[in-house]
Amino acid sequence: MKLFYSLICISFFTISCKEVIKNEKKFVAEQSFEEIQFVEPKVSNSLVVNSKEDLLGYWVGDFKADISEEKTDSIYQEKNYNLLNRKITFSIDEIKGDSIFGHSITAGNISQFKGLVFQNESEFVIKVDEFKKSKYDGLFEMNISKNDSLLIGNWVAYNPKELKVATRKYQLQKKIFIYNQNNKVDEIFINDDKFNTLKYKDTIDGEVFENEFEEYFTNTEKLYEKNASIDELTSDFVSNLSKADIFILRNSIFARHGFAFRDKQLRMYFELFDWYMPVFGDVKEDLTEIEIKNIDLLLRYEQNAEEYYDTFGR
Image (tube, rainbow, N blue to C red; front, side, top):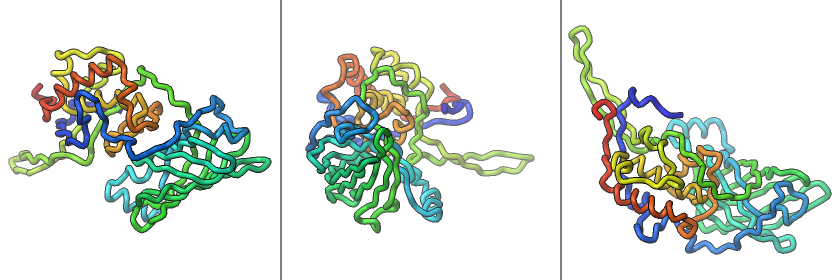
């Protein structure tokens, strides 16, 4: 939900080179699939599974930590909330006989997998291994009843000692990705990793007290006024945006195209929206003419946008 801006002082952060589109002309996003080779899935239109072919496509859902209450409390204390629940796209790209091939996308990590699919009279059982290229890879085991639409299973990391969350559970539904330029961005963006601590003095009954409060990096209400995939933005409008407004407005274009964000804050923000479906690592060829034009304009203003925004003095 949006916050009441009259209650807080809002500040904005400088985006590092890793967090922005680095090439103004090519519109290269923050991650590519250059080292990931996979077959584009031939998605069947059936969202209910009765044959192996019906399994082909994108399966999306929450990738929930399956850990003890003690570990959960520890993660909360460390404010690593993103470790507990994140979105996963499990893409079944190809099936040859009993062999299954695909890739998973979660937390910006893209991992290929291969394994086996078995079927009996009532269900399909799938077991696949990610390619063990990093500590984030593991083993997926899942099943789906025939004439059903829900893949249910668990994941176990190969190197559990290297991860704070080494076991996860999930229920995935098959989704067909469709670009929709009308998808809205209407939630507040707060980067809780970056903030300023401000101190001030207050006098009560003649006694002076020193207080402090945290100033987080967030957007303003102006973010919700335009859709950068539909509205042709103007210099007058963009020049009055904060750096965070521009940052989210620009990246909302990529989110609508199914871009898989590697940046934690961007990923957590767009996963707030049911319409967001991370499936691609490079979408520059899919951008529309108006989106390309808007990205160009936003990039030109982003570098010099006002970093600090005081709602009481503006």
